[in-house]
Amino acid sequence: MTSLETTPRSGADTFARYAMIASAVFSPLAIAVSILLAPGNVTAEGEAYVRQFVDGAGSYPLLAWLSAISAFTIIPGALGVARVARAGRPVLGLVAMILAFVLIVPISGNSDDVLYAGIKAGLDPATLTKLYTAYNESLPTSILGMAFLLGLVGFLLLGVATLLGKSAPTWAAIALIVAPVVIPISWFAGLGNVFAGVAWLVMAVGMGGVALGLLNRR
Image (cartoon, rainbow, N blue to C red):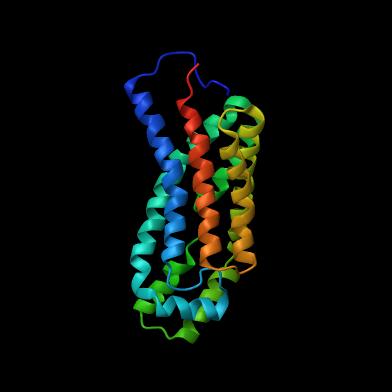
């Protein structure tokens, strides 16, 4: 596999590499766990999703913290994956990294937070459904929610760059290519929590496996 360096590492550099590997695994893993623990069907839409969210609102604080921790760790994790991908295919890896960061940067809000705040304010399910629909569809920046797909394309291309550059194990690169495809399928097809959770577990395998390339020595 492609080497990432020719000079000895410092202790700080070694710590940073292991931290990026751990982050690459934990960030998508936290999402997978939050999906699998969710009391309702996370791939449902509209009124059905709102009613399930209301019924399971008591579990939301835990799920919200899992999502927050995932958000904290996705940046070092993605940087680690990108560094490995760029080792073998610098240009493709750079383009992929830029696209992947569209998934990371919070350019749209969290509708679940809005629903939870509405529940705490005492709104009824019908009003919550209207609020949820308006939040997702009527804001000037609502279209930016689809940028999530562009970010997934970035991670897919990171997998391609890794595969072509042979800078990490083949199985990891393939997992990183497959995961960004099956993740949106689980939502658009409404396949339920198990399928959606497994899709993010595949993402964890792909990101973590590719990030292991940071340990390669010449």
